[in-house]
Length: 465
Ligand code: 5AD
Ligand code: SF4
Image: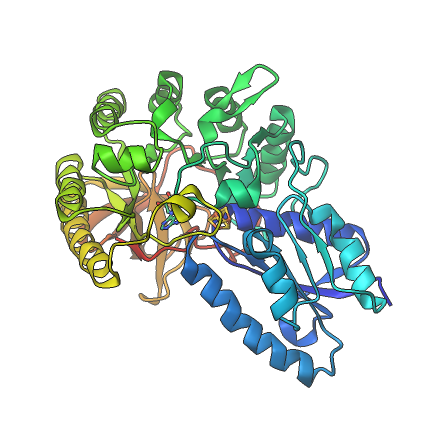
């Protein structure tokens, strides 16, 4: 039997992967397969994988061990497919050394999945589909989502930046933009289904170009869609952040005032070695401009510590830049050598594990202090919070985010998921604000029905402070 199989998908890595899993669900259910939420009754288990750092690979190897046992227990009736970035990046190793893997498919080959699954069920060879495309944007595929308040919408695929540490250009191929009208239509149907917050995704959103529209146009068009309360985006690159986008963020009532702007390092020599194409001064000028044009904007960042040849003094420069810029929060990572990248081919991973650990700990401590200080300033203010879920740590309370992406917990009586609530902030602890609801935000409408299952929106990180 090769049709009407039960498919179980597990997703690792970033929001782009979450979105891709929704595409895969659609591609497979269009071919008559059904979806299941557990591996126990699945005919096919798909792991949608990440390759960004070694720990992403380690998780999958661990999971494959478990699936090996599952296959034996189920008398080899289960098909296991590895899809996504790790499949694209490791190819032969996964096929040759992992007998439990039946097929692999890269991020541009998901339309091949019905064939790969069918071939495997008919007892064929191990299959693979790894061609990277310059045009595939999965146009015509309608993602199958679990519903809820939040949705991710990919606006482009691939990356042409070639930062020397990064595997993404090798796993996701060249940059290409999705059709603008298709994106707006997708957001319209999300709004009709009760979605309140849309995050536009791309590896480098400001490269978006389609039918004469750029990314600022696209943000405005999606934020204009009736019913969408909030639009976010990730990620821009500091090298080409246009003033037109700052203008949209500052003026459009439905565009969130939060910008994730990865700096990666605070030393000009390292930034050059990373091929980031900006220097510390120009990054700081950009941040100053953002704060001038968008009062109250929250800015977060990504940092890599222990990039090859990073000295103590250069790490000190990163530390000083973080002290000076005062990001709202930061994702901080230890450098992890990735196969095929320029850094792996030309530079030696020469910062010791203990130095990387010491550096990450110092930055995390610094950022915790800064985040705490920034968040304390909100005590006494009333902020608008979009309710995303029930708090797991504080029973009876609801959890949501402010416009500036600050997690906020408040007593939930009378409010529900999807509401926009005015919350009087009473205290802050770490990265979280705590408060008391003072009413629904003016003009906010309740959706007819909103499912309660939503993703956390957090990517895989070493540390998020
Ligand atoms: N090692 C560590 N961190 C990395 N990132 C990307 N590649 C690597 C790597 N090889 C981080 C960057 C990027 C974030 C998504 O992941 O900080 O912005
Ligand atoms: Fe996402 Fe990058 Fe991981 Fe691929 S390698 S899943 S693009 S974070």
